[in-house]
Amino acid sequence: MFSGAYAAATYSFAAVMFLTGLAALAVIPTLPTAARDLDGVALFPLVAGCFVAASLLGGVLGGHWADRAGAPRPLAAGMALAVVTLLVSGASTSIWQLAAGRFLDGLAAGMVAVAINTAIGQAYPERLRPRALALMSTCWIVPSLIGPPLAGLVVEWWSWREMFFGLAALTAVPALIVVAQLRGGSWSPEPRPSSGEPSATGAARPPLLIATAVSIGAALGQYGVSGWDARHLLFAVAGFALLAVFAPRLLPPGTWRAARGLPVTVLLRGLASGVFFTLEALVPLMLVTGRDVSPPAIGLAFTGAALAWAAASWVQGRLESCPRERLVVAGALVMVAAVAPAVVGAHPSMPSPVAGSSMVVAALGMGLLAPAVTVLSLAHSPADRLGHASSAMQTSQNLGQIAVLGLASALFNLLAQGGASDTAGYATAFALLLLPCALLALLASRARRGASER
Image (cartoon, rainbow, N blue to C red; front, side, top):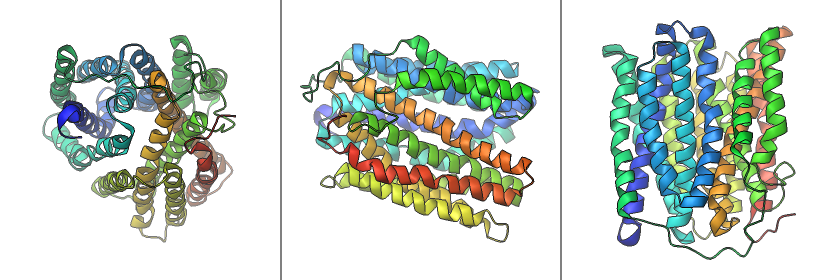
């Protein structure tokens, strides 16, 4: 994988993932300071939600482009756009410009994520795909260690603007490398025979107008759940109505009923991502607001989770003889084990590391599960539909984050309005995550290779 015909692709993908991880992990802790300086704290939920909403559209756009022209072109375009959006954000003079920058960043991230997965399917034989996907996860280890503290130092010594501009300069390097390799033809996917399924299998490629509607719906929904007055309720209803109408058209037919083959793998990705990122959002919130845990301690939890994810991903990449659906079940059971310390750790008498450990354990489960689900999705996709499959996986991941986190947050706020304590609210919200974890374990067998869609 690091020599011969695959060397150029491997080193290019690794560089892209490293810088993408550094930017993602460094920007997030910078945003609150930027919003405060721009007098836009009230709109911070919108700034934070723009990224996920736009990545939905970016994933669809990248998947269409990859199927038409191969993965290198959307990958290069996504990297170039990432540089532009960092410059836009760094030069922000208002909270709305920062929101626009985050929207563009989400668009770029969606394109890059789908292009990387598609490129792995196009550039590597099936036996190397698990290792390639594991390498992509491993490339986040160093950024997870240095990203948040580096961002804090830069903001403290200079300002958040220098953080964005510095990341733009760093991201420009792999962007130029990818563009140069595209122009020089350093790597190009060899056409491989289809898996035997006709290209017409699945839904027709959805128009970008539908993806745009879903993206707007996600943004409206995330803004709507940031408050509970009549205005926010109106936005939430409008956002989730758009999602209910248009989101199914971005996914393979049969996704909601867990049809065998590609549809169920797409559903599994959404469920798993929803559980993990809900823990990643609510556990730090609980520890900071309820226990007054210091930011460095929260950073250690994120670092531990990143290391656990990479380690588990490395392990699954070496288990070549193990059926991927069994790894999905194993990952789901590990995530069930992660929910327990979150629920128990919600009680004020429990030490803070108990709740924090849930993020690390959940990351172990994701490291086993996520690459396995991706491999299964590629195995169920014809050679000329890999971009469509990768796009559907990215869309499901984002929708899973929005849906599971939204449900957990709504349940927490409902209990709070009813007079329940924060302890009861958090514990109940975490316990809710057992449902998608159980579905992951129960549905994994429907994703095994050779399973026909029904």
